[in-house]
Amino acid sequence: QVQLVESGGGLVQPGGSLRLSCVASGRNFRINAMAWYRQAPGKQREFVAVTLSGGSTNYADSVKGRFTISRDNAKNTVYLQMNNLKPEDTAVYYCNVAGFAREPLSSWGQGTQVTVSS
Image (tube, rainbow, N blue to C red):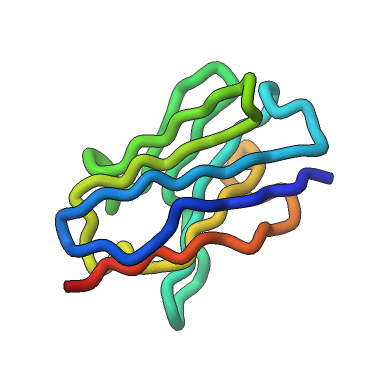
């Protein structure tokens, strides 16, 4: 089982930036695909971005060109750099080990709240 701890959320104005971090423990981190997901109020949790063990990445259309996912295998950490934030990016953000179809494979952490508002 993997333990996941997300951090870095906060309140930011539209157009601002945030960098989220997720530390994973309990498994061989470097062999796993890791992904970020988010859940807005009243909506289902959705996929945001994924980084494969070899470093390739993929993004939801809604965040392409604004968000960047990266990983530091030495630190068992995955990051999400979020630029040009919009009010519709407001959500609780979670990371997880990702399966072939981007499905989450482990228990969820507590997530980190991102609020974009003026």
